[in-house]
Amino acid sequence: MTAQDEAPELEVWIDQDLCTGDGICAQYAPEVFELDIDGLAYVKSADDELLQDKGATTPVPLKLLTDVRDSAKECPGDCIHVRRVSDLVEVYGPDAE
Image (cartoon, rainbow, N blue to C red):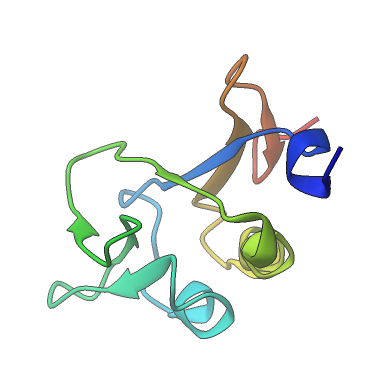
C-alpha cells in the first residue's frame, strides 16, 4: 500500500468574498492558487486552468498538501477551505474542527 492509498482525497476552494488579495496562497502553492486580474485568488485545475466559478474546487495533490495547508493557515482573509472529498468535512481552514 502506498502513501497515496492511505491519504484521504482532499479538495480546496477559495471564498472570494473573503479574499484580501494578499497572494500568500499563490506564494506557497502556485501550482494550486493564482491571483486573477481582479486581484483575488482562485484555485487552478490540474491542467493549470483558472477556475473562476463561485465555490469551484480542485484536488489537492499529496505532494503539495503541506503548501496548501500552510496557505490555509496563513491566509489573512481566512478564505481557503480544504476538505475531504468523501464526506466534505473541512480539515484545514476557518471551518476546520
